[in-house]
Image 1 (cartoon, rainbow, N blue to C red):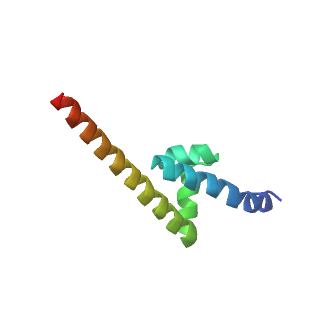
Image 2 (cartoon, rainbow, N blue to C red):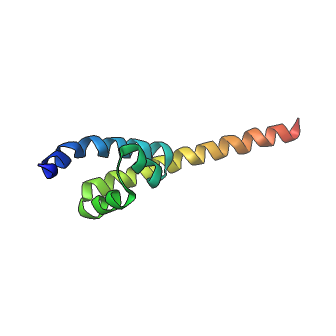
Image 3 (cartoon, helix red, strand yellow):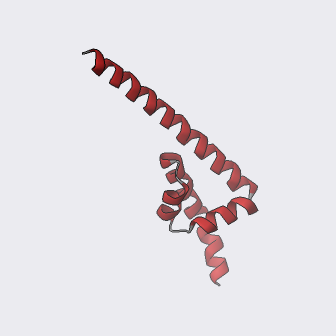
Length: 83
């Protein structure tokens, strides 16, 4: 019964994990947000290609946002140096 409950819960925690990963780019923080261990999420990544693909997409999106933020800060910082 526990395995069935885990399987039924899988779509929800994966959604929560991937959303948090997209927002933070941090596996540990995303796993905590989803209520799962880092070890479990990495194990699921190895076992399920669809999850691994979604994980990769989430990391790429997080990196894109981080690049934009770094650019914004560098431009804002540069403008402040000129003022």
